Length: 109
Image (cartoon, rainbow, N blue to C red; front, side, top):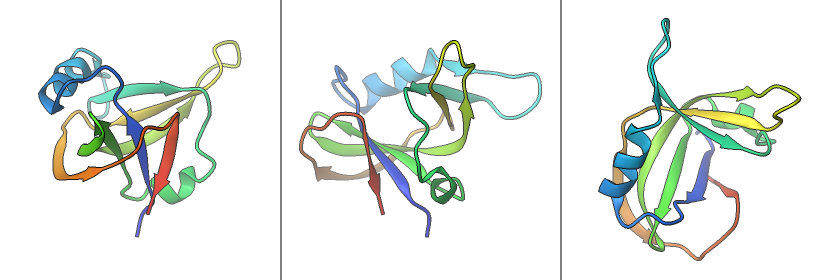
C-alpha cells in the first residue's frame, strides 16, 4: 500500500478554484505525459514509499476534498534548491474529511 502526502491549499475557496489554479501551471513536455509542478523546499524523506501509486491530498477550507496522483520527484538545481513534485493534472474528488491547520505536508497512510 503506497504512502500519500497531505497538504493545505492556502487561499483556495473550493475544489473548482484549486482546479483553475492548477490548470494554469500544467507543463506539457515534448516527451512524456503532462504534469503540474509543485515546488517545495525539501524532498520528502519517504519518497520511495510514495512513488508506487501515492497521491497528494489537498485540504481545502479545513477538509480533505481532492487528491492528485504523484508522478515523480525531481531535485532542482543546487542554486535554486528544493524539490519539484510532479502531479497528474487531473483532480480526483474524495469524501470530505475534517483536518486541522498545519504547515508543510504530512504523510498519510
